[in-house]
Length: 288
View (cartoon, rainbow, N blue to C red):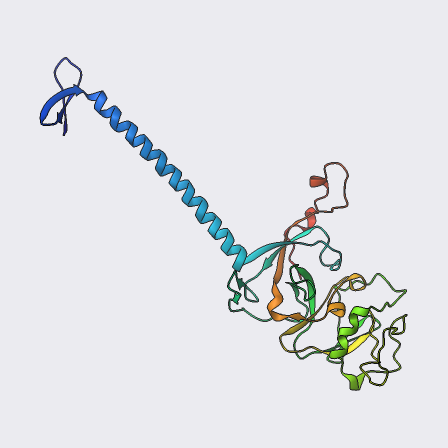
């Protein structure tokens, strides 16, 4: 037990009971021992407060990234006219239902993807990568293209965002053979010239589907199945999209780009690249 005393004309002293005996010691000695203990406790408290703040910040960051917004970078020119190489996007993952990490479950979606919307997704031929394209066909739609013009359910669509850079050729590609399984055979025009290669990979000319010769600018009509979407790049003549590798499964759609939070021109090497190459006018621009 400790009790402080003040004696006239002398240093303040304290009384300490040790093993039943009452002793007087200088007050500073008693306070010094207590101060060291308090300082140690204070350091531990500050350390814990900082650690807790960091843990909370990390948890909140991971939660926002998993369920609300995630950043993506545009690596190719397939969406030029709308998105450029070097654009960095904030993607709304909640709008189409975010996936719960490790569990394979999805949160309820606010709504389903619509025609004309730009989406981020995992392509069927390379599911570990993220692609950005525009939805042009939803489940139940009939799609076809004639001389670069897209028809949806038999009607020509107005696509002001589309860019065409190649008017001299209409190449075919063996990867487009997948369309045979979805082509509406009764409406295939056998006399329609598809591409400059004339369908060299045809297998059986005895049926409409076997005689189907799609090309980059002329294909269809094909029917979009349930829970699937057809996507195209806005840089239509230089885009690897659903024409070549097929439909996008609904579960593979990750979100909708919201805004550009950064943009720079990777080809600009003059001066200070990280400063001069920034496309300041694009920062904060919404994605439509």
